[in-house]
Image (cartoon, rainbow, N blue to C red):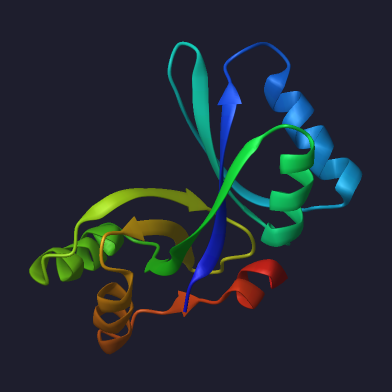
Length: 143
């Protein structure tokens, strides 16, 4: 139960993010979620798009360095402690969190969190055994 995420190295210069989003727009690719971690000269853009393979091919054709990785889209109860409970379940099984970021699209009473862990198969088992809903690629696309 994974979701494909694109990771893109992007220069930290004026207009570069606008250029990136224009490439997606011109290709008809919907950007569902976006996170950027930056440094002085470049950033790492992580995002969920409606069509990750088309995005990878299109962006590569425009000179971007793109990687597609598997992440988990976790439904987190939208209340104080909702995320803490999920992270505790992963920690109990010694599953390390590499990063996470949130996104919202018609989520109802849940927050949606993208999670990257060092043991994805074990994380899927732990979370589903605990009754925590993980979204599929199709479910994310439909949001």
